[in-house]
Image 1 (tube, rainbow, N blue to C red):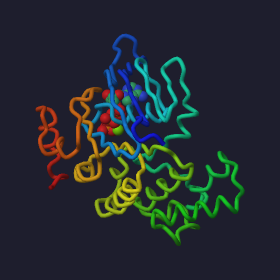
Image 2 (cartoon, rainbow, N blue to C red):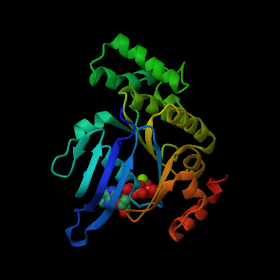
Image 3 (spheres, helix red, strand yellow):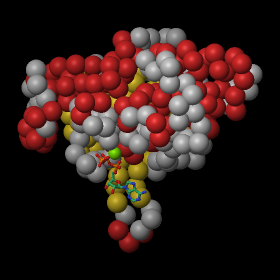
Image 4 (cartoon, rainbow, N blue to C red):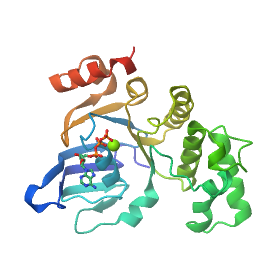
Length: 256
Ligand SMILES: Nc1ncnc2c1ncn2[C@@H]1O[C@H](COP(=O)(O)OP(=O)(O)OP(=O)(O)O)[C@@H](O)[C@H]1O
Ligand SMILES: [Mg+2]
């Protein structure tokens, strides 16, 4: 892997919603940034600023109307959309886990190995068990999602996301539906992944995690990147008034 080449690059990406022609809404407004292999990027900003949409576009789950997105050497724009290819390179972790309720922990993790990669059941089971161990859930292989805490469910979702060996992990508020005491376990696993060199973009309201774990931070508001830079600089000395206000309103989540 060429560490000097960006794994992800967005150039002048805009997304206008066409569902209401009379009042077209700009959801993403001229967004450009690059992510290099092994980088952890935090994406922060107020509700409705376009963070999830941006992540979904990078993951090939949503389309853009202007500009271009390049992920792992795959170029696409609104006319040439290779979503199925992107989905193999990137995986998303959602706020609500989205596990299959009728499958055991092990089957949730091994399903894509069997269905997408056509790996034989015995080998898929071995790989799944290793991944389950990686998220500290050994012993839970035969349990169903309903028997797990939110934090445990999210860790299963992370193991499942890792099964296809993605090059980029996209996390959309991975801890925001968890009780406070369960947040740390999930953040610990994400920290472990970040330290192992996984390239990650994390949308988060956990300012401590963003400040400590991400190399760079992007602050979005109204579909635009308002401020970006080295995370320690962004959090210590925000330049724009909008980011200063945003961080102030999140100070209960942020301590040095
Ligand atoms: N399917 C949709 N149809 C219409 N508008 C949408 C749709 N999805 C998102 N939007 C609008 O796009 C804007 C950006 O939404 P998005 O979900 O990306 O924001 P966000 O920063 O992730 O917010 P939050 O912090 O609340 O999750 C919002 O104004 C939202 O209302
Ligand atoms: Mg969102």
